[in-house]
Image (cartoon, helix red, strand yellow):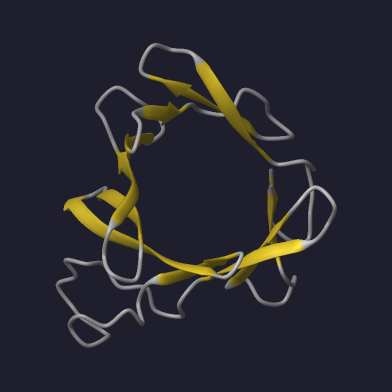
Length: 151
C-alpha cells in the first residue's frame, strides 16, 4: 500500500493507494491539531475536530496524539483509535540522551522500532521487532518530489 499526498497544493489530505492504483482511503489532517492532554484547547473538550481522520475502505478511524514529557524537546504518543475510543495501535516518539535522532517505538499491538534511514537520497527506514528481526520498511520512492509519497 502507498500513502501519497492528494495534491501538491493541499498538504492536509493524503490518499492510500493499492498496487493497481485504486484509491483505498484517505487521511485528513486537521487545520489545528489538538493533543488529548492539551494545555491550551482550541477545540471543545471531547471533540474530535483536532484529530486526524483516517477513512480506509469505508471504515473510519482517528489518529490522536498526547504529550508524554514536555520540555526543550517533547516526547509524544500517537494512537490509532476507533470512533468509540478503542485503542488499535500506539507509537511513542521519544528523545533519548546520546541519540542524535528521536526514537520511534511501536508499543501496541506489537513492540517494534522504526530505525533511522539507511540511505541518503531515497529514504528507507527499516522496522525491526524486539528481537531485532526486520519486519518491513518505510520508503520514499524518489529523491525529489513535488508531493509526499511513501510506500
